[in-house]
Image (cartoon, rainbow, N blue to C red):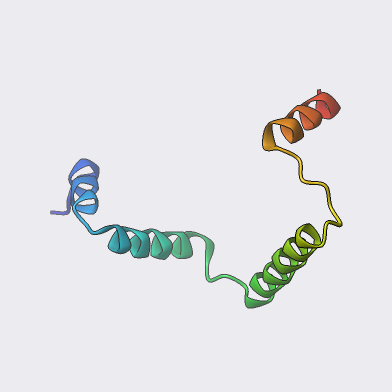
Amino acid sequence: MGLSLSELRQEIQALKPEEREELLRGLIEDLEGRPDADVAEAWETEIKQRIADIDAGRVEMVPGEVALKRLRSEVG
């Protein structure tokens, strides 16, 4: 007979953090499938561009709470 969910959680919590991370990544992959390499590459390019824009001063940095307040007022 298999482990109950409670027992399984206890077993998982006993793992090292890196082992839990590996397990979690595997479970997510099982649910969502393997990441699309083109999408991952596109995100990597986007992230690098955004960092370059910040470093070059081309964008205004806004604190998270201010950004959320603006969004709430627009959606609101």
